[in-house]
Amino acid sequence: MPLKSLEDLASFCKRRGFAFQGSEIYGGLKGFWDLGPLGVELMKNIRETWWRSMVYERDDIDGMEAALISNRKAWQYSGHEGGFSDPLVECKKCHIRMRQDNMKDQTKCDACNSTDLTAPRDFKLMMGLAVGAVTDGEINAYLRPETATTTFINFKNVLDSASRKIPFGLVQIGKAFRNEITPRNFVFRMREFEQAELQYFVHPSEGMKWYEYWKAERRKWWVSLGIPAEKLREQEHEQLSHYAKAAFDLQYEFAGLGFEEVEGLHHRQDYDLGSHTKNQKDFNIQAKVMENKDSTAKLSYSDPQTGETYIPFVIEMAMGTHRCMAAVLDNAYTEEDLGEGNSRVVLKLKPTLSPIKAAVIPLARNVPELLTLAEKIHGELKALGLGRTVIENSGNIGKNYRRHDEIGTPVCVTVDHQSLEDGTVTIRHRDTMKQERVKADDIPDIVRKLIK
Ligand code: ATP
Image (tube, rainbow, N blue to C red):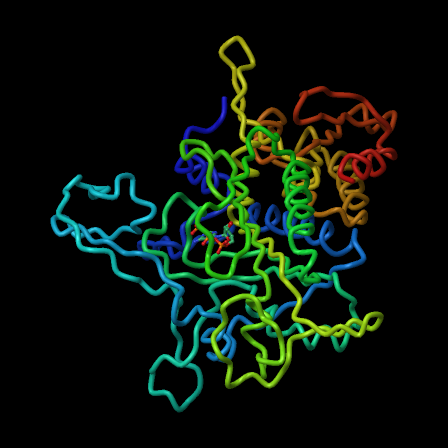
């Protein structure tokens, strides 16, 4: 049985230590979530899987990490300061505020069904800050609402230092902040979240080719996480943003919510590098950009073979890692009927994503030799560097198995009295619950193969 809703997922995440409402002991703060001991491991594994596929397994992409706060001008010329807003509607009867394009019925209040609503107004999504000692609290900067702009403004730095040839890409994983009107659905819509974004720079004549290429690549990556293809859907945008030539959302079918965006792919033409370029008239910029009076750099590329100088087009992939985490958990969560009135919850995560890779369990608490052997095996597993492994010395083997099923640990290794006699241990597999007797010395190799 799968989950029924994202609220159920939130309860599960709290119970097991994946995620907690931010500032919970002070009544919480809407739109902010904290990751617990298991959530932080799962998130790290998601980031690593993404980074490996983007950077380590390719030759054409570099990583970078920009500051969360940039010169305000970056957000002026990117168009965010003037235009990054959502349409806000308020119910005149119950006074709740809603994002118009997310309302169930645009003529009625989501909460009380009243039709007495205000006209929509643009609600600015960027969070303002006062940076420095001279401002007296007046907003002069913003927390970034995306990582993309902070990649674009470093284009020239990377090009000059890394000697890249077009096509090439730049990735970042980092926090983004948006003053969402209605944060909801667990980590699906937050005010502080994390993005993993690729900006891929191409020759203008090859924009659509690379757009199609990345569409297929990204779908493959999501399937590689263990998400069945039928739970993913592509939704091409019918109404395009002013900068986009083509765009689509990759959607996942969340419990109780249906298909919703987990990643956006945008063909952004030369809008971004063009917007941040000085002497824009030197280039035949195709997107509609604001005249730039402040930039000190031309974000262009000169082809060493053809001598052509141009502003590259950008194909962008923007994934929310929290939405990815929610999708992965939602997909993995399974309630199994074991017959005779027994059931279990099992988190069928790919072992690469599991927060805990293996648990070593001495069968009896009060036998020091069992603990010593368990600690030896645990030490060998830690030395593999695969991620977190644990030793469970709480006694009840059945409870330990159930707990590790529920948090997605792929295998448990049990050390018992026979282990002391013949050097064998029991390895129990999460998904099948099958148990086999193997040599204790073989455990590191077995676990390494399973996780890799
Ligand atoms: P939406 O239409 O849902 O508001 P968006 O189209 O504005 O999303 P993008 O700006 O394309 O989203 O951001 C890229 C990705 O960042 C999204 O696909 C999503 O996974 C993630 N993301 C965006 N906003 C949020 C949010 N408020 N909370 C969590 N993740 C988010």
